[in-house]
Image 1 (tube, rainbow, N blue to C red):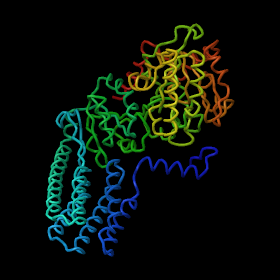
Image 2: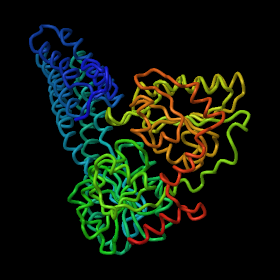
Image 3: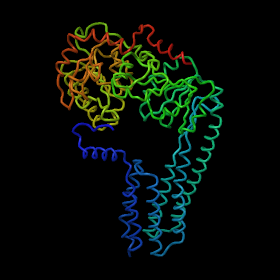
Image 4: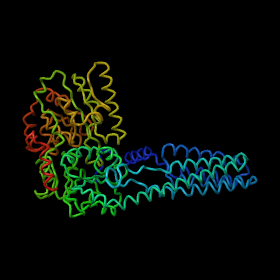
Length: 568
């Protein structure tokens, strides 16, 4: 069980969860249904239509707001609209029911009640494959019954207006009939799409068998993490063997289709994976430790190879789950020793040292940093992690660090971790830093790089090459930066500076800023060493081989290609 952060009360944890829930904007069902129910009850017991007017308007406004923000569950929307239709019927019955209004209410109700069935049908409309010969090069277009809900909502609105104003009920009937027709038409489209998807699925195994892939890559991750796979795709393609990527959700499917021209297959359920295990397959590669990886690891006829998406001293880098793979490709001996040092016993034959091919184009330092008049510093903080024991982010003190760098005449490349945006607090700190750099660039002309330029246009290697030194946290970018032999600072967040190198051995080559407990200490001393005499230069060169492998630079990426080919 993960411990809570020091000093964080249970109440503050609940408050944070409440804010997160509000930001996610899944409005509670009662917030929409209660006004609709109130309108229905007042229509039943009141002697005036005006009694039900206020709650009916409130319910309609809430429905409109939640639809606009995508904030209400589909089931809630259906219940609220059925209650409003019942309200319209009662109002008409009490004040002389127009028969056409009654029929319009019934037709609109039928359309609304069919929405859950429609939603279930469209949930079964998803891509099967892209770029796979025999299946088609384009993914199945995504569909949504959202427009049906809007059309049916309009029918509910018109029915209420007719009930409150004595308008001709035929108007409500006409609008309801049009909404029901649109609902049925959309349902037929959905049915055709489901049948088309099933037809493609029946061809999937035959198409993959004919394609004759040698290996597959299995990837499942939250949205916005395509970098995990993107860093490996160029090297997997350089193996010169046929392969395909298996993903487990539609978001990942769209992300991968945008990254590569190799076949991409979507299999959501465990029972759907048999179709992708073609007879020609020899191996399966993984770039993270997603729980659903075990759905593929169960195929014992394949060699299962974990590549991971970075090497660092973080807790997830010595997770015991790495033992489920036949081989773990690691950057250097440091990764192997890390498991042993943390009590995770793994036989030596489960490892293969392949370096980090992604750093093959990282430039090596050509001289001491003290010789550079106005050095450029890369600030690359990590994010807060999924759990308290993996929160190494320095962003809460990042503004002070960047301000100190600017005060020393440095220009800054600011590239936060892509997951930073998942935290409102860290997102605010990023905004403060970008504002600081923008203001300084405007006033003093320093060539700071930040925002889209640093985070999208430039790769991580580009940021490395554009800098003369780096400030970062416990992160895989530190081990990768070691390849450049340039100096770097690490910010001690999860442990005091005195204990930091013991917990995170790569810090032996770093200048350490103590930010444990939220207070910055040793900032000036660390920057003096970083930008001055750089006493850690020899230590960095020694640890480079330990962390990134003792591999000749001219054949650095080839080590991975040779080792991977052994299993193909």
